[in-house]
Length: 565
Image (cartoon, rainbow, N blue to C red; front, side, top):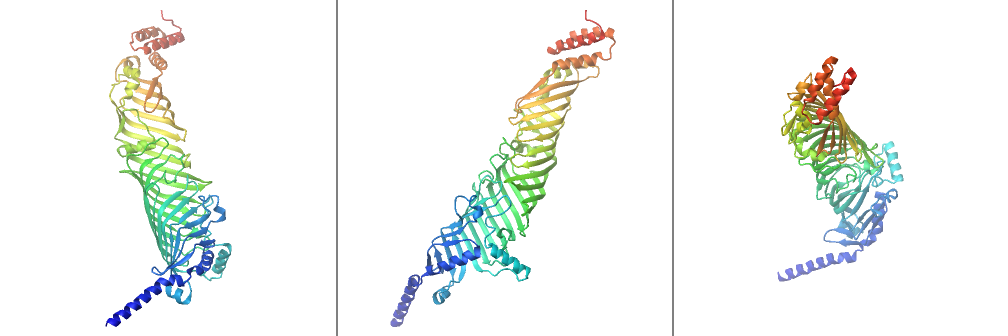
């Protein structure tokens, strides 16, 4: 028994010694030229490997580094590197039996460790990886075989392909700069270019977010790798629009978005479905982060050839407030150009209140909208960093608490007997809107304030919220001097709104008001009665209005040929 144990021990030591010595007995680096040639042939790019070493315990051959050359047409757009892929090491899982006894390299799996990958798209939609595995000769061969009904080109199959702890730089037309994904891990099972194969990808996003993608890819398109069919389920959490470089510095949009949905492509047309959620959004230049999230449930059809798409559905939800966004977009000359329409019927202002800062909507200091609804029919056109907005807005049955319109037109309020109160109730506020990056113009303004009357006019709001409005108020008298001096009890008052949105200044045209009062009072009088009307004006105690009214009446007396004695 003792001899048996000793014999088995010696045998075990011999086996262990043989295993340990195999890497020194088998020169794995002899396979490097062949492996480089095979990979170069399959990818259609120059592939260079570092020294190959055999790792018996893991059953793999390891290259100290890996590089795959860049498409020459993209070298100027690359991130300073000359290679499409450069990696710290390449591990190739092999069949040890075949390697040891037949001196052949039978590849079972590939792992690329720590790669840096540049993915670049041009304005015409071409990707730098489009030519992978598809030089002109292979493309022509594939077309010939397809025409002859011979099927796809034969290619290598690999049980497993992995990317571990990689970095991917993604640059598309219109991006401010490349989006860089870190800690990228990819796993493809049972890879063969002739069939759809399952894959998973995880990565960290700029600004602390992350993404996970799983689905199938293939069969591999040997003419244009970017047109390979794909079916995916995608989750994206915490993508910072600014830190990612997804928007230009000049674009007004900011915030953090998340996405949960699906995407599919047949190589020509792609369809994306799902829900995107935006947090801390800024939707206008000068805006500040919104206090509540916005979600959009959407369906988008994207044409890969034209680099354009159609938003088939864009259901927007801000709490219980609903709106619909539809339209088209196009990537052209390194810009994202849109033509969109927004329809928002009767959205509760209480739900929108925390979104106003994101839209750079400024209310008078100390005021707040309370209750009511807002409706919008708007169009957005042009490059995303220079959008032009047109359409109509209306607010209904709302109150601006902390703001008294009557006190802003104090002289008119006293004449009309309007009660001064801390709030202003609006039945309707409506206007046509035209906005570009420099100016917002409101026209056909109609404001119905039950306690005052109707206000009409138009004007502009500058980029610094400076106001320039010409308005007219058709004031309803509820007592006061106006009920005495106006035959109808109503009066049209012209005024300007200047200052800023936070500190608006209402400047009444008092001279014009006096003339209107005089005209209203005198229009139905006989010439002999004009002097009595002038005396009535003289008894008024309304500051500047008194002087202007007397002057206006005097002008009318002159017209009648009577001079005040």
